[in-house]
Length: 366
Ligand code: SF4
Image 1 (cartoon, rainbow, N blue to C red):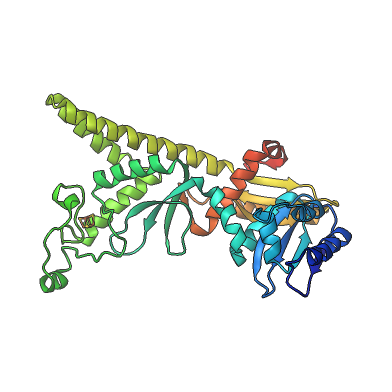
Image 2: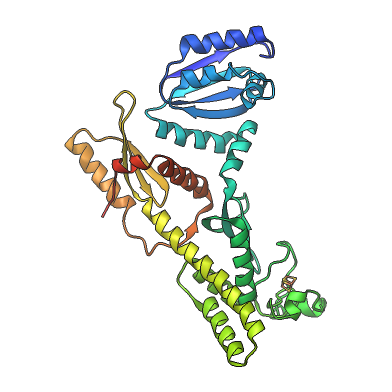
C-alpha cells in the first residue's frame, strides 16, 4: 500500500505552518481512493477520514474559511497528516471503520453519532436479564437484535413485551433475590417495593416472586419472539382482548387492542429486518483503481473475507472453497446481531442503499 506523510515539527496553528502542510499535500498526494489520519503533536489520532480522491479531499480542509468549521478545527488540532491509498472507495470505507474502531478519534465521534438514528434491542447478561433499547453496541456483553429505525416506537413495543412476559425493566445492577435462593432469602427478608410486581407486570425476581428457572423461561420466550420464532406474547394479548370484549369490558379491551397493535408492529419490523440482513449476503467484486480488483465475501452484512480477484484456475479453486466455507448453511437465520458486527452491518447497509447500482456487481451464492 502506497503511503504519504505531511508533517510539521511545530504546532500547526499559524497560517504559515498550515501553508507548509498544504504544500506538502499538494506535492505528494494524488487523486485516488484512500484513507487519511490527522495526528496531534502527541501522536494522538484526532481524525480518520476516507475519500475517493485523497488529494482533493485533503486540500479542501485548507479552504475552510471559518475557524469554527469542523475541518478547520481538525486541522488546528493536528500536527501531521498521514494517508494511504486503497484499491477502491469501498476498501477505503472499510479501512476507515477499522481505524475509527481502533483509535476512537475525538473528531469522529460526531460522525458515529450520525449513524445513530438506528436502534437495537439489547438483552443484558447476568441474573435476571432485561431488555432495553440502545443506540449501538456498548462495551459490556449482551445479545443484540436489530437494527431498527424509530427508537421511540421500538421502546413502546418493548414495554408491552416486558409487561406481557412480566420481565423486569429496572436498574441493571439491582440485586436479585429469587425464590429458590432460600439461604439468601432467609438472611435478607424482603417486601415488594415495586409497583410492577404489585400489579402483576413483573415476576418480581428482586423480591423472591419467582425462581431463577421461572424467570429464565420468560427470557427464553422473549428471545424466541425477538428471533421471530414464537408468537406466544401476541397470542396472550389477543386472548385477553377477546375475553374482555366477550365480557363487554370494551374500554379495557381497547387497551389490549393497542398493545396488540404495537407488538404486531414490532413483529413486522423483525420480519423486515431478517429479510434485509440476510439479503446482504453475496460475493461482491470491486474494480481496483489501478486494476487491483478485490472480491469481498459478505454474509449477513459483514465482510467475512476479502481476496484479490482470481486470475488463474488455481486461484478460482481456492476461491470456490472459501465461498463454500463461508456460505455453508449453519441453521436458520435469526435477528441476533453479534456486538462486534453492528458497526459493519450499519456501514454496509448504508453503502448499498446509497449506491444501489453496486448491487449489479454482487453475485448471490445459492
Ligand atoms: S418488581 Fe423488582 S425486578 Fe421487577 S421491575 Fe420492579 S424492581 Fe425490577
